[in-house]
Amino acid sequence: MATAMEDQMTDPVLWGIDGYDDGFPLPSKKEICPTCHGNGTHGRNLGAYTEDDLEREFGGGHERQQFLDDWRAGMYDSACEACHGIRVIDVPDRNQMTPEIRELYDAQEQETFLDHAIARAERAAGC
Ligand SMILES: [Zn+2]
Image (cartoon, rainbow, N blue to C red; front, top):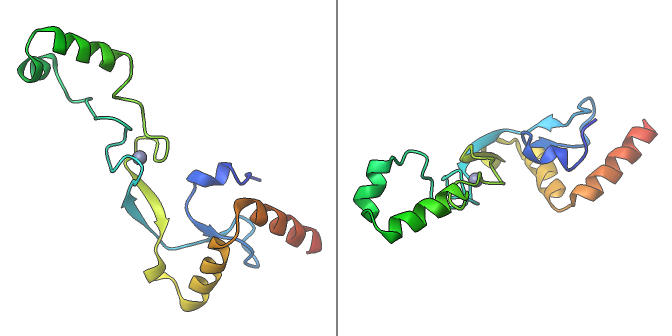
């Protein structure tokens, strides 16, 4: 069974629903990653830049060389840790939830991951 930490990148689910040991799948929607603002990286996304592009933007002097050094050092192209470069993340879509599910979801959101793990273990033991 996945741990709470490993659950972070999976689709949003609701815990504690009878018959859904792996979590009840919540309706979700794609949202632009708030961490990298859809860039997929924490810096500027330069994957499509060519040497010619760089020459036009920076000329052939020291500034360009410094830029290239930084780029090769990975300063600009580190993948976003939140979306792993996918640029969007799955977030629960409250508008698609039934009132009952929404209520359970809101209650779940008020708990921490650790609380979930404890509650799930207790429920599992009591079944
Ligand atoms: Zn991101």
